[in-house]
Figure (cartoon, rainbow, N blue to C red):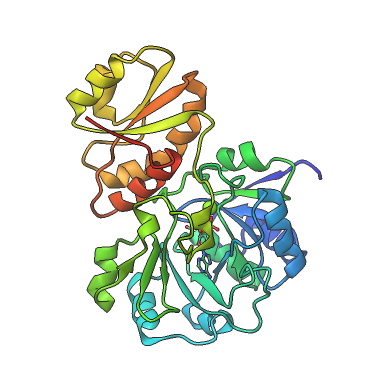
Length: 343
Ligand code: TXA
Ligand code: MG
């Protein structure tokens, strides 16, 4: 494989030369990492099984882990889903374009490769103007998982993408840092009751305000137990992990600082901005205390920087868990393999 092209954008518009170049590569069966409002996605033509197969190779992703199909117009949902229940219609009107993925019965035109062999498919209409312009210019729905190596933190900048994907993909389209910072909410509407499979940019409270009560899969809060069913294949796999061991510490700022400062050995901290002045060990902040939106924006970059701390263990400050915080909590707990120390 050749060097990965770094494409820049003048204007988020179908006519833009970077977007035209990305679309041409995608139509040819190539791979292009594209910015979305959540994280960068590793895109290929969702209808081309060879192209989709290359996504799995580039990421080192298990082939049973299905991909999300991205569309640019609400009307195109019927090209991807076999049936669209009323709840999906309501949610699309409320939250699309935006960070919500709905799992629906799959239309026959979607290859098994794309859906990981399932008869359902995850569908999302992103709000990022560059993502929408690329889908539009390519003229096909785009399959796109997060553009990281399988198991690593999702990329929120083009340089994160290149750190993992240089030489493995044809191009990255640089749209600057992603606004939300964690991936979309994944909600299954293919079963008897709506089931939240992954918390993300749209909160459970927001969803319930439109369609009423939903179930939340236990894997959102806890490690999947042996024999427990993974409704979403992604739940089975280790995720978001830096190479350094991470442990989450539950307690207020003062006890967190006291605990971390008293540890012996090569120790680091993953904390809030407000904690930094009180810590005597190498530390990385992932946002402001009490502000889950900033924590979501900063988390993946902070996780990537932990390996530079030269620590054997990194102690992470417990996130706020309401609203967007549930998505942050879920990512951080998985990065820590659900290891929590209660102070
Ligand atoms: O924000 C996002 O969703 C980003 C951007 C690029 O759109 N994409 C993303 O894709 O996070 P990925 O592949 O990294 O995560 C998708 C998750 C996986 O855990 C996968 O198992 C689950 O959604 N998923 C996809 N299709 C599914 C389906 N048909 N049934 C159950 N789970 C599904
Ligand atoms: Mg991912």
